[in-house]
Length: 105
Image 1 (cartoon, rainbow, N blue to C red):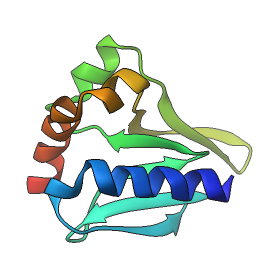
Image 2: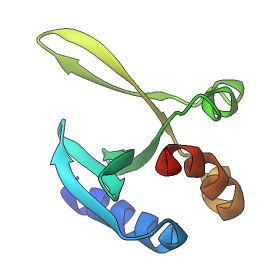
Image 3: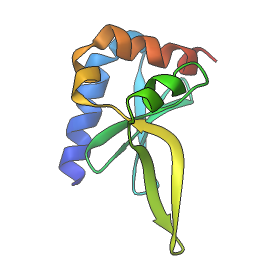
Image 4: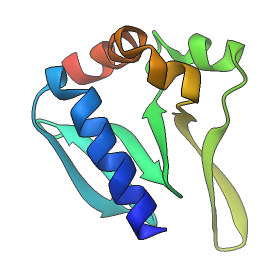
């Protein structure tokens, strides 16, 4: 699983290079991704999840994108991060536009 996470991190860095230097660190059993100390995404179980800003949360809800969830102390916890599907990976312009409000704030 660690290899699939690193593969997704490197793919993300390549695809989202216009955002700047993307850093990663271990967090919640996955990895957080940040530009200039602003966390904009998580990689968990080999999948990329974007932090949903007010501007893009509707995009994810309309597409019924799964939220990032984990179990803590026997309880399910859902985070405000939504899975990037294959269609969004193919549309780099849309992917970048969803991230800009998060990274610029």
